[in-house]
Amino acid sequence: MEIAVFSTKKYDTLYLRPALEANGHHPHFLQTRLDNETVVLAEGYTAICIFVNDSLTAHGIEHLAKKGLKYVLLRCAGYNNVDLDAADKCGIKVARVPAYSPYSVAEFAVGLMLMLNRNLHKAYTRVRAGNFSLEGLTGFDMRNRRIGIVGTGKIGLLTGKICRGFDSDVVCYDPYPNIDRAKEYGMRYVSLDELLTTCDIISLHCPLLPSTHHMINSETLSKMKDGVMIINTSRGGLIDTVALIKALKSGKVGQVGMDVYEHESNMYFEDSSDSIMLDDVFSRLLTFHNVCITGHQAFLTREALENIAQETASNLEGFLKGIEPKGIVKI
Ligand code: NAD
Image (cartoon, rainbow, N blue to C red; front, side, top):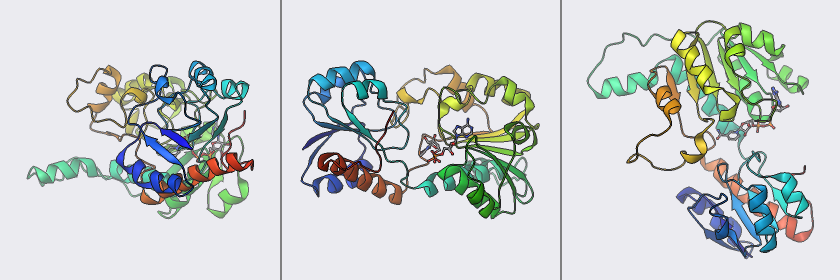
């Protein structure tokens, strides 16, 4: 089968090509991001493979359904970028890779906590410039600090487990709690309100849904402890960035680690270093010395890329053999 693979980077090709070719398929790797304008590039393909910032709207789906599209293979866990109702109506099957390496993201989230806490981002540039002063680099022991995990799915639970290794006090919130596993990892459930009001570090690990959009907003920020650290490796839309900037300016929020940004889709995964930054909100965020932003790289480990490739190939084989694949996305 000919498969159009959108938003391809070198690291995708390296892992996806052998996984798809092993089953006799012919992947066509395109660097282009899929959206309503570029959807013509997918015409005539039975399967397309897309990533987090590709966008498959009802318009795109209806158009491609007429051109023979049958399968959408998401090589990521989230599927908020695909209109599932439209896919269902057009008989197009959608699959994702629900868990490729929760360790990759959990370890990255904790990495951001440590970097911000111990000011490693500042120390790195200081020493390179010959500045060995320690002024302004004071951090805190993670031990006995209260860390709040919002969303105790695969990644949130592991993040909490790693934090327990520091002897931190880890509390968590999830409307669908996993009580046994959380207990096993030494975490305890509290109400969202208690988590927001009592934690020194708050790490977000829930999906972006209409109900979680801007869950971190001026009201929830005002409840938090002064100087709280917020980590978001989940989805940018969980945070109202304008409200976050206000809270950073007032000192309410002490540190922010963000691997995701609510308006990242036109920006992330590309080298735009020669272009003018047009997003004023993002530009303002970059001016804070206590904000660390990374470009949606938390997933990026060799193990995760290998798993993504294998699971994507296996999802396609499942569809072709009429066996419901593990990663099927249903409405
Ligand atoms: P998961 O589905 O295993 O867990 C999500 C958890 O969030 C579930 O337990 C669910 O009950 C809970 N939840 C739902 N609504 C909630 C709410 N209102 N408040 C609190 N919790 C709520 O997902 P996961 O694999 O752990 O992934 C978590 C997030 O990380 C997802 O948004 C995913 O898109 C993101 N992610 C980011 C990267 C990256 O590279 N930055 C990589 C993979 C996943």
